[in-house]
Length: 248
Image: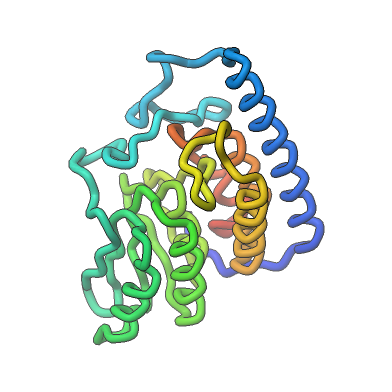
């Protein structure tokens, strides 16, 4: 896969389609919540659910997800508990770790103070704070910084919003990019005690952000149908379809 400059497409139509997909997904969550309250449950994959170490194929892309052990390859120890910025060479820096609250402000200040100024960020993160990912992503775009993923490294949950922010985006063939449902507001349990307005507002902000970055908001259809304890791994052709990378 290669660098991608953000492209133009019918923004309003894409966002409206994304909103429709979100509403359908939200309806499914409400139905599941009602079933849970009634003591019913949907069939589960149980212990047979594929692990991140297993190959991903079209139609078989959901994997169990533990943010403390997110890497399907290489070292299995947890990534840093908050984002860490370290210089690799020249203007290339590594941005790695969980996206913790207030990381947007902290990392933006570190980027501003860095000499030489970063022109490329190599990402690896299991995700974290969506609000901080969106705020930091907008800062990355304002600074005209490219983003990159290297072989066998991961970018899950909120991390793809940082990846999307790159003025160009480079993703190695064996890198792993994944999405799933997010929590918004105070609730940490879905669907029994979540605020619908918070989720609608949050998903609307995410789809608007993706459109700003030149990413097709329809990528959210995969996030909305994948619970937080699983991850939907995007195939190379999907990364191209949703404009994370440019078609050759």
